[in-house]
Image (cartoon, rainbow, N blue to C red; front, side, top):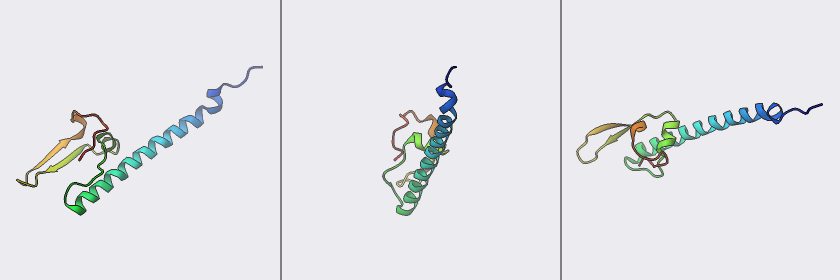
Length: 91
């Protein structure tokens, strides 16, 4: 007369909630990046707070377009090769 294991009783619930949390983080990161993009376009310059590198990568943004205000040059930076911690703000 053994009892059911905790994995049997709670395993599906734990996996389901972990998947929902992952989807919520993905959506939150995407909305934060979209809000930052809108602030950058609206104010024509630096907008703070900026999302972190890890948040932008999690949201699916792989590149950052950089424009020099002095010489008007454009450059594209791949976010996945930037040698900074993932919690570094983009700025």
